[in-house]
Length: 449
Image (cartoon, rainbow, N blue to C red; front, side, top):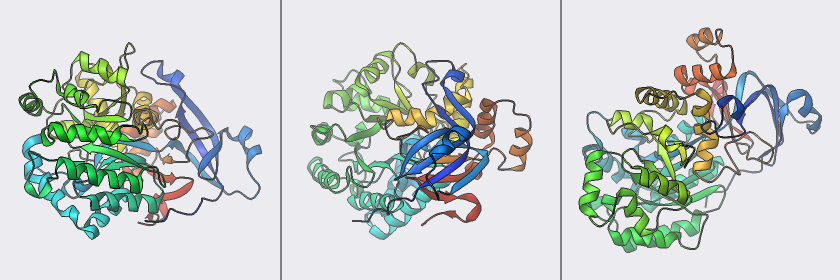
């Protein structure tokens, strides 16, 4: 097994801290925002020990600790991606299809290569390097049907020290022969992977039926059997992404009330379950998500690229029954691993549906909201004492156009808005993982990649 990095040395970061004390969909955004223009974050043992105003916090700095100066930049919690497929990185931006045709023409042939250990490791390394370059420190990741794809991914994540959630895709029907498992082999392989990786070196396992059409009822029931008795395991799948897909599910599972009900009957709707997309679901299913503690992953670039529809974000966040919701890049259906670009498209979708996505709400979704969606908000998603030191440093002057626009900003919210409208990977000055500098834009990129 890949060894984890050695414990990180004490460190401190000085800059403009931006984080959250609450959900800005359920309270005024300016009340939810924690905004410290001259802040200090002190790190020891991979965790934040102190975070606050520089003058108040410097008294807690251990002697000899180096302070990295990020003044002029924002210090945020690392971004959390709640839905993404690492094996699809080589086929990002594949032209011309909607979901079901796109899977057959591009996705399945690409995923066929991941039975090769060396190839899987190469793509896992590139994928994780791209995530760090985009400021993302945790993701819920789909591997392929091949156990080797999971070993490659978790091995690379362990080497970098990133906190990741991932699992082997389960598919025992309606997929090419070269990508199908069986209900029993999928169960057995997943069980071995859980024993090998789950809860070790910041790696977490997600039982991963791809979506209802590619799993028999028996496979879905065995997926639930994997989860039984272990509340720390995750479950991830797709839900109601595309209208043709929804109609297909209704044909395959005629006794179920809805697409979500297919998973519910199998025992898969629970805390730490993350449903990708959830575009075409009704109020009954929104309520079921709320009461069960399962989450929805909003994937705006993918939903636009594949013509799938507009996720009803503000319905999901209704104060009467808020649903845990995070952002997902969904690469390769999505067009960028950058959460800044993802927020950009989420804003536009909201505008088209008659809503205004406040920048504080958008950044909350990308950090604390994503952490809550994964039930990991006790560890990540917030810049505060006791949290894992997974941090993203945002540069609002990264490009000449951003620097020009920044001169007009009169509030932190306005700075955040310009970042989500004009920013991309160039706006990520640095990424810290477990108290270690994992990516530095200005000195050669990602450490160890």
